[in-house]
View 1 (cartoon, rainbow, N blue to C red):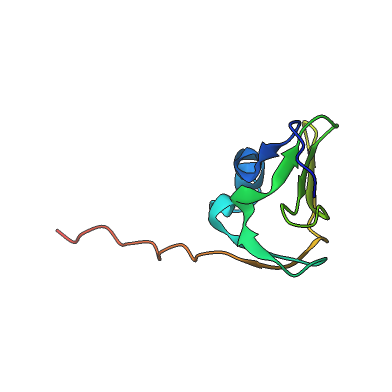
View 2 (cartoon, rainbow, N blue to C red):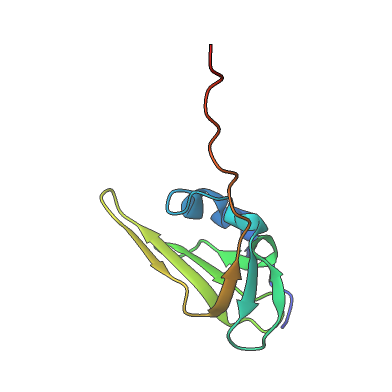
Length: 98
């Protein structure tokens, strides 16, 4: 893939995906449905020049994720990701007993 100065890194998706998922997905590992490369979401090339955000594989350029928001809804398309592996949140702790 050629170098393109118009994209941000995958951390640009952190806030958008954080509104949909409970975990920080920038540290999640995505397996590309196109080339099979495995990399953290944070290394995706993210374009925000459209009515939403588009995250592309840093290796082959296939679209991994599309996120579009309105005042009432969020649309999320992950069809370019074969698998998304994320750390589990620790279980909630109970308050100490008196």
